[in-house]
Amino acid sequence: MKNRRRIAILTGGGDCPGINAVIRAVAKKAILEANMQIFGIEDGYHGLIENRYRKLTYDDVSGILTAGGTILGTSKIANPYRYAIKVGKKLEFKDVSKTAIANLRKLRINCFVCIGGDGTLGIANDLYHDGIPVVAVPKTIDNDIKGTDITFGFDSAVTVATEGIDRIHTTAQSHHRVMIVEVMGHKAGWIALHSGIAGGGDIILIPEIHYDINSIAQTVKQRNKKGRRFSIVVIAEGAKPKGGDIVIRRIVKESSDPIRLGGVGFILGEQIEKATGITTRTVVMGHLQRGGSPTAFDRVLATSLGTKAVEMIMKGKFGHMVGVNGRRLDEVPLEKVAGRTKTIPLNHPLIHAARSVGTSFGDKHNL
Image (cartoon, rainbow, N blue to C red; front, side):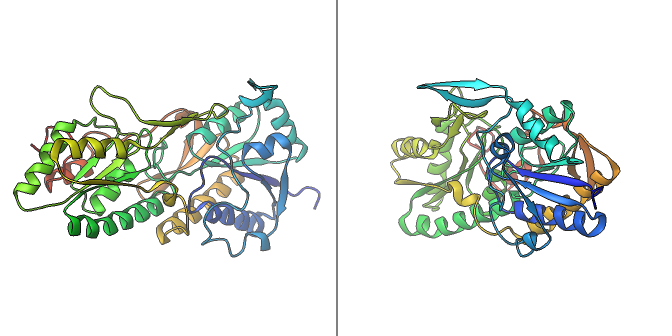
């Protein structure tokens, strides 16, 4: 029993549906097939730095497949290599990675499983290069991680956003308004593109295509002339006008990713109303996209990714992330993932399909 292999699991970054399904899959397979001991690090890298963890048994991870969020807690601001510490009223950043690494080594782990997005996986890559055996699982509702076709949490977020757009349709039609639905997506517009198409959005605005307010106004006016007295605009929070910039809601200085977006939909609404004379309203989906139970698709995907991660541990395939390539699960080097963002190619088939049915992307293409 003293020689039982040990793994530690950490969930970092923003929460999303499906994290618990991954924890469950990793823990159950590791316990049932390899008789491993499982330790859960609490509250992301905060827990790693502060040496907060708990042992996870088979019973601990039973019944959590459908639960949203993460039973381990998470954090978006803790980075062992750039840890924010208040000295008086001043915020200073220190490298406490040696403390984090020492805490992992005290646990005598054979592998460190990191479940997270680009920030979490970037830190995981640094830990790997500092001698920690790491296997990663891609998690983000934004679907913007390099090396994988899709991330768990994305389908759930798109489903929530699409339901919101569906509900907005009825009030838009009743009041003959322009209704703007703002969804998440800082550098990549995958949620806006998928939910916009699924929800029948008339105009979809994504970070990859800078929009022109005149083109948007013209599209709305043309729809009105044809008797379509309402328009649905789906906009990613990171979308910006030609020659303009993103709308920053606030700066979180202690975070490794300090910019928090939000509010572009309200600014656009004022511009559309002024340019067209048509009443315009904005709805921000916000954290609704992160909450709740994962879809069936995400439950299956999370289970597949989690069990594959354990297979990689058993093979000693460290420094890699589980990636989805078509119908195959790949072992992707973290070097190819860290610090990179998967944006939407301008020649993506879904952009072409949307344009083919008359959807505008706020540019001159459809005019």
